[in-house]
Length: 420
Image (cartoon, rainbow, N blue to C red; front, side):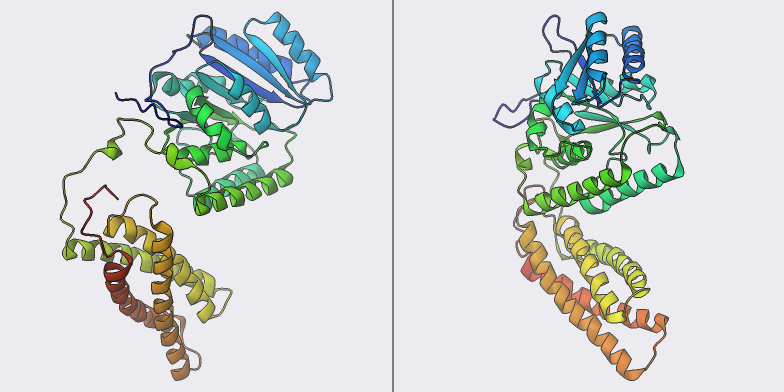
């Protein structure tokens, strides 16, 4: 396996442990704030479980987030009497700050964390870190949404959790299933590159880390977990949700403007099969027409669904404009990759801007059709509106293909597949 040793890139995955003698393979961090009652039973249970089931040396690090009760004393007592347990004191609150501080300084090749309430069954810990030790994956997360997971929690928290993950999928194109389960692990070499890019110091830290890792092309392993909600949790749901949404906006804006240096992490491993050249595939007009028709059919269905949804609470012209705008952005992105074979981020903003010009032409066609229908019939039926819009969209689709081929992606035949 070839290793890229250039600055800012990650080496090829290697089987762990690769640590020196006496260095733990796994460092499990427990971030705590005012947990004087739960801390001791949590650490004792975790320590006993690791000593009994984990085949390598381990460490448990208690990261105290500026607790004001007797938590620091409890942590110090545990560190003094249990081998492999240490305590770190931070003078500022923030779970993300605690994880960043401990992970950045740790010498263990695999870093993990879990919540002090131990809501997640500890039997999932070895399956969580095993893919990181073997070199198969870069990060691992416990998922309450994965098939096979068993979760006990109230309807309110279930709704909030699922809604949040839907927001991440819709806004940041996240593909991982559970951003906030307090049960995660990461390889130290990956953490050293990713942590400087993560800004959040609170609860959004997990999400930001995962989004950046996914956008960088790193492999995230998901483990279904058994999880029981802690009824005494001190997490402030409304404030946390507000901070998370602010974080989503900030990260989404940074990704859209290209201000995050993720390119240095892309394709970090020399054996990535996506880097292998594919056999040359004819990219003539017939193939492009087929791809464009498939994308166009899906885009039309997407557009009609959006229009019907927007039409429920706004006028036909506004619903049409909104539906066409959203579907046009998706259509341009899909055609860029699937029809014309353009890979990578280069020129993406320019292509979308040109696509919006094409969208404006389509808007003029469909809006003109609606205006003509309104002039002919005072109160047209919804089915009639849809029929007129379908016809207008077919005409706009033909024009869109011609403009894409001649103007937006004019050099589609000059680049071999996979080189753009």
